[in-house]
Amino acid sequence: MEAKASSSKKEWLRLIFFFSVILIFGGALLSLPRAAIPLTIAYVIYLIVSPAIPTLAKLGLGKGPSIALLFVALLFFFIYPIVKVVPTITREAKEFKDNIPRIERYVETQYSKTRAVIKDKTGYEVPSKYVSEVIEVARKGTANFLLNLPQVLASFLEWILLVPLFLFFLLKDATSFKKSILRLTPNSIFERFYYLSHKFNSQLGDYIFAKFVEASIVGIIITSGLLILDIKFSLLLGLVAGMTNVIPYVGPVLGTIPAIVLGFAEYGTTPTTGAIVLLYLIANTIDIGIVFPLLVSKIVDLHPVVVVMSVILGSQYLGILGMVVSIPLAAAVKLIIIEIYNGVYSDRNR
Amino acid sequence: MSYENEITDKLDKKEALPEKLDISMLKYFWQANPFSSTKGGNIPKFLRRIEVLKNFSDNELRLLSQSMHLRSFENKEIIFKQNDLGVGFYFVYSGNVDVTVDSSKGTEETANYLLSLDKYDYFGELALLQDNSARNATVVARGNTELLGIFKPDMEALILDHPIVAAKLLQSVSLIIANRLFSVTREVRALKYKLTQRKLGKDGSKS
Image (tube, rainbow over all chains, first blue to last red; front, side, top):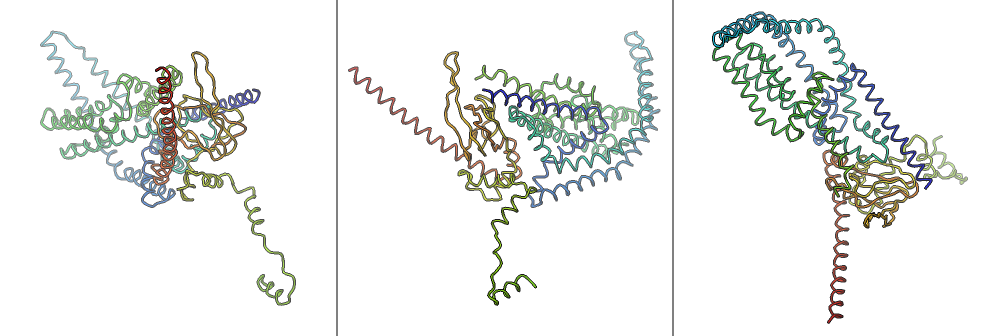
């Protein structure tokens, strides 16, 4: 009996030690966003590329060489766009900025026209302050962005160094790191902890991989469509569409707005604008009708309300990154809740 | 003078030769050096002595040992409880474990001692195959015990990284299960036979 009591006491100590190690690590990461954000980005990239390692290993490469090959390929894919595409996008962004006054004027004239029509039909005069407020907010946002640009650039430079570093060590040491965490895990929760963390990780990985593929497909469709239509800013708009696509429900709409506003301002109510709208409709239909059901929906099975709530929560705490990560996190929380439920009510079920 | 020349010289002069190099002693000192990790090297050797893993080559056992986890338990520590969700298949690396089955009669729950497992024995193989597998018995460590476990996530990783090792492991697990199924079927048949005999006896005594 005494042996049992002392062993359970030791087990408690182990549990406390284990959870305090996890809490300290988590707390340190959360309080250090400068390290946490590049680490998260590196982890996301790791989740996207790590399935390639066994495939490369099957081709006869060892683990070391396949990691090195993957890393070199990734560096190429990172550096190539920075060298080639970034200047184009920067030029487009600059031109876009020059176009802003014209777009503002266009929105204002359209607004006053609509106001006149509404006044004609209903007799109600819509106050003109709405549009000026919106424009003011947009202007302030741009100014803020320009003011923060040096800071953003500085952290970007930091990331360029940190992300590949973290990524390399994740690719190289993730397995041994996992093993040492498992060695710390107390016996009484070992199986459950291992299984849950594995499920959580694979779900997160699958989700992020699927989202990455989905965003790339949408981005490519829109960019190539706009290039065929010979629209200005096609690369920029395609990039925006791909990036916003990662945000569920709201993202596709957000990605469409700049293109449609630009289309109307640039081409007016001509067939070209119609073609742009049609292109976005087609891209989003392909996304919603084919890509999403095939790729993403199998991975996370959440109620739409839960999805929207978790996206809002994520954006509150981690910004855009939070929006991306929120859904797999919600799925993981659901997994854990189901697990605890099964544990607590297991006698009733069996 | 080289060692070889020295020996031939001594042979020619018929002098006493130096003592022979004791290979086994050298090997002992080599293996006992504090910097060599003997534990990792011992796991494949341990696995080699398990009957159901006999179709593995040495290298495959080494790969298998890399995805296994050595867990140590104290005396009376519970390894898993009956009806727990299980994901692990264990080999007894050192020490002993007791297997008990809880049977509830009304409100009373009694733990019935079933059997004790020794070094090189294994248990929990169903968890590797079943989804949401519930443990059929409670397993408790007797004395300080070390177990070598392989878990469902390891199995999934093994299928991707080393499919041949994974296939052989699944073959071994199927072998274990097939053997158990065979003995269970035999037992069921024997019990059925006994039951019909009893029925016949009862009917005979009635008439």
